[in-house]
Image 1 (cartoon, rainbow, N blue to C red):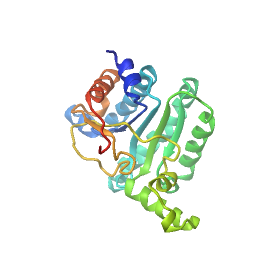
Image 2: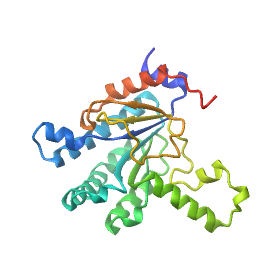
Image 3: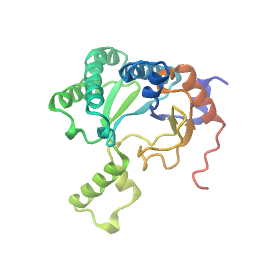
Length: 235
């Protein structure tokens, strides 16, 4: 059975990825961390195209967490600039490939110039019908859930009327189905404050390869592993 067949048979729609290992990849090769991050962008482009080839509708990637602000200022500045430059340089190509771009997280902490770039990307691609790419920037699941609670309270919804669906409607990912599969590269076996609500029943696949080495073949291996799982949803 091909990867495309597995996607169709299992109904796999949404893959979420913790793109881990850029710095470790660079360190192993005695290269600056910046090179690892740049290679990580190439891996994302490859993975996005692979999702399109396999028929996977949604891809959500963890680009910058609420905790990443604690890194050295030089690296934080580089990462923010990398996001800005990548979107500016790649937007037309992604638009031509019919990608629809979303951003999740507290974007208010980002610079105004970067926020403008993000808004432009969302606006330009909003009518595209291909793969939906969600990029998590200044994202943390605890922060997301806390924000949802505040919004629910401010909306005036009575406590007795709150259901799990209510909470989902106030999350950053509103309108997007929960991930079927969560992939983490780099071998670490933890969730790292990522989509805690949404991955309640996701199948988790850990790959030892660092993110810069991730490609269509490795995504295919993840899908094949997903195809072997029996999703019981607590039953």
